[in-house]
Image (cartoon, rainbow, N blue to C red; front, side, top):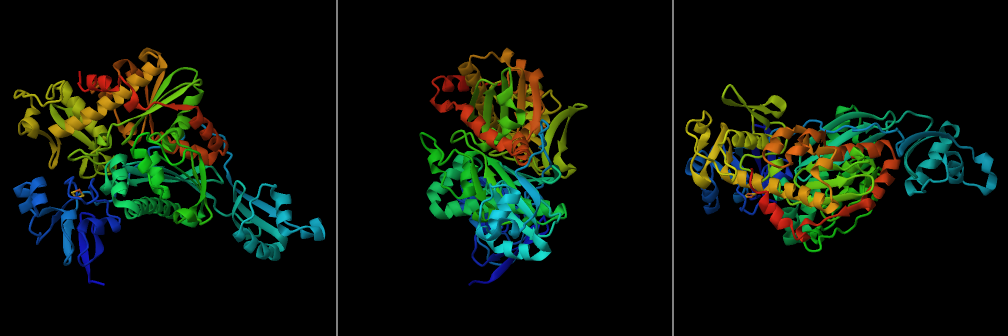
Length: 596
Ligand code: FES
């Protein structure tokens, strides 16, 4: 085994240990450092920028393509292009605490009837007599639907011996997660998890009281392996078992981090978490379970399973109670998953007496047009632009992200999540900025920067043609290429909306409510969305921001067990429209490329 070196990280002020000869990119990822990167260390994306505080290694040819001579002189390099050979100090812009803020809560009141319960029982072996057993007595007093497991059998004798048959059972449905002698007040915690392509969010609940104890979000640790689901599927296809293991490990560790931090902050321990509902798009869920998602990436884009799953935490390497029950609600199709089902439940779209739209503007743009009678769903290949992916200075909606941009006294002003030094710009900030540039005619309807030397903001436009960029603040800018990415994303979503309306024979005027969901959706100013043409103008007064509706749905399922069954009915009712198979798609998509 080679020697170990230390990597000192600024501005995070952390130390990471790495093997001699280990690639910087993978050493940082293994240590849980949220470094940027979208190509999995292949030297294709140019995103894994780090600055060697001193003694930078000679630049490679790849680096010379992505970094300017002044940047190279300043010590900027691509982490995936070098190996660790000594102790070094690195400056990594994105390595600070990536904690987001809570963006979900219940959208409707839910009656409190959780599947996870604490029950006090008193067993008497005498009652059954010699024909009976302790398990049969337990079933007598707690209901027949108890699953007999080895840990239950092993724990029962002690529980019977002590405290004269008084036992405390903690159950999730028929599953006895744990039992203790005596009648005790054991904490019963639940975790609602949303596995977003860019962000992982979790909410910790007290399932005895039905209250929320805390919520957190972190950047998805898989981000360095690809900004969107297709690139992660490709990563697995090319890298096989090893790549699948690596992606799964990243996701499981992310969830474990959230579970541990949330439970410790609530003065509990992760093993008090006994019920988990995990939602996410189909690719994220496949990767979370260690199931190869390749079939989703090729025609006919089918997932390995669609039905609801109920698993044990220990099968998934989750560091909660090993017998905690992990529920994965059903999927609708290869690209519309349990997160959309949960969002429909959260907004009660399947009960509406009038047509409503649900737009989940995450890395995948899922769209649902629904009412009581019919639910039409599609996934628009919007790419990760609205979550800051493939944007020069883009980042998820986490601390340090510029979330809003506006004009103030003729100059640009902006808001930063967490009120800290800006590290990048997230989807809502990007949409604001683009809307402002369109409004001020600094960008024309085709998406090109237009020369307006008379405008006070024009001095912020640097360079010409395809190299032009708009400076927001020091080191943070919007390039011509970024505008193209946003243009593609906007056109894909708008085309999806128009095709679903067409398919259902519904006019935009008939839509009664537009639910805007996703971490992006909780920050966005709907006026900016209408300005860039993502939603038709007539829908603007009907927009309702619902934050992370997928997480809201997962919370609701923890609080009311009937909703877990209802999720299956919703998934069965939903009809999936595969946009790429729609004849009109290309035509409608191209027509929506313009900002006019
Ligand atoms: S270039 Fe290093 S991760 Fe893409």
